[in-house]
Image 1 (cartoon, rainbow, N blue to C red):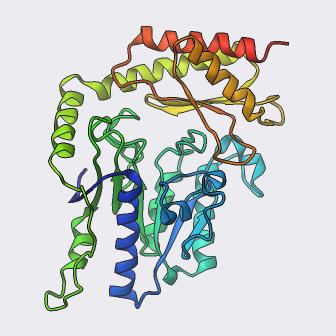
Image 2 (cartoon, rainbow, N blue to C red):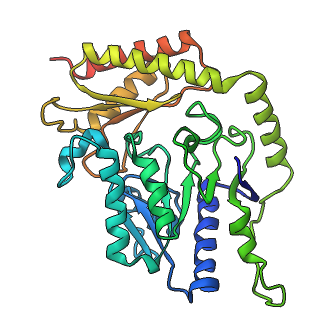
Length: 356
């Protein structure tokens, strides 16, 4: 992670994102009289289950009945090219740049002097496995620098190999100010999450030693306890020694092609997308107007695969009316036989659930 050397250890992805939000708020008070405190987040993205993280969540069903939420969080539009027809003014050409410009429009509407950070997933996860359109991330970086807005990339799902790179953002040539990670850090063998930031951000918390409040005032009950880092170090070593980034890229491409072939046999598959071994297949009633299938039918496909001994996921209780994407996250050690087994199970399940 070039340029990012300061690490805050904590317990979960939600907590890691909370740390970033708190740093943004503290910087707002230290440098801007508290004014530059707003945090932008994207429709369909998810950043955790605490109240502040739900306040930054773009999946309304996950936050249902938990309000009122923390003030100062502002939603920006998603960048899902497959559903650009549902966004007013969205062009066919240069959609990615247009989608990023909608973030700039929000910044101007709120006032650039009030916006402190933008929090995004590199590939939207539970909101539909949404890969960014061409030109999107480059424009986002440009906008953040233009308005002095900290860029916070949530790698809790995508990080540590899932997309075929160590971190999802590395596919797109951007330079974040914060990166949060959790799930892949120790592959579930121990609880560990991290907030990583740049030296120039960290240095803002130690510029006035005489001030008793001049440090990042936060604690984490088990953050940095030895079990988590020990498991993480071994996990990272295995990823390197077994060339799992390369395997993830190769098997991800293989599975993406296999799912595309599957869509030729099943018209209910409207769109296949993903990066590395993080893939999605969106199910629609028809490909012309892209009306989502019922969530119950999606869950029936998941259940059918389960009965075949294959575990897959799906967007569920996330985005109202759009919980219609099958989600695939095979292990980074998966081989072609494993991928074939998954795709064969989905093939059979789709045929049974959508027969006739």
